[in-house]
Image 1 (tube, rainbow, N blue to C red):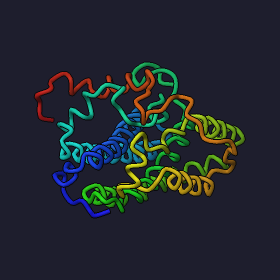
Image 2: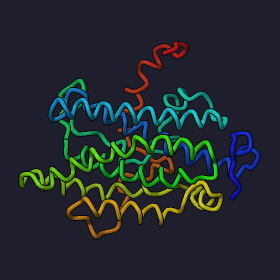
Image 3: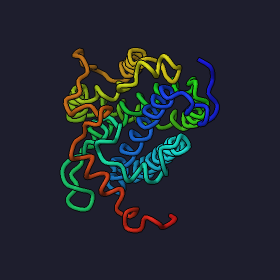
Image 4: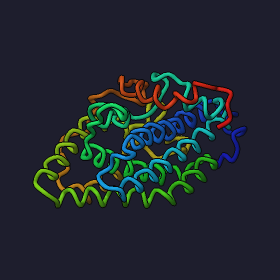
Length: 271
């Protein structure tokens, strides 16, 4: 596939443009929601060093989401801030597992969050993101390739952080081992749609935007098997729904309402 260097060139081919837009929405929406769930741990992480580290990772991830929303703005999808805050849940492309609440309660009212859920989710997510970014770094759409290459410079450190947590907890107390393994098995039933590319998957591969789903899954699984002590042998499922197809839970609605509260209070303000 010939390299496409500008949004104007991408728009000339409808099939190419539609597949590209769908892919970039996946990147943007995944980062947007996972960074929100991370932000809910501010002041609640296990210790102060982790509070600082996780906050930094979360801030970086929201920055990555903004870079992808900017790509979408350039592709004619609308204002980046509006894309982040104004779209309905059914229009979102994030995987459903990423929108899942951290636990019981809310950040302001009796938060009873589960660190094991967060560690497993962040590790699986960052591993998946690394694999997908590496594929996007070779994309036929040059602005996407450049963005992926830029983000990968930070991604190495994000993934290393969660590898450390997974390793530590798998070699800690019996309770820690059980809780981590329980969340891994739970994730296996809910993570399936994250590794899918949606209805435009065939076009994405054909047009050189990204590799195929099977290759992504294989590379992700190979990485996970190196660090998770007991990987389930059952196929990955998507029991919460298929976010790539716009299927979402009430958890996403809650997240969007919270994230957009300040933005919606004065839509004309410059923040």
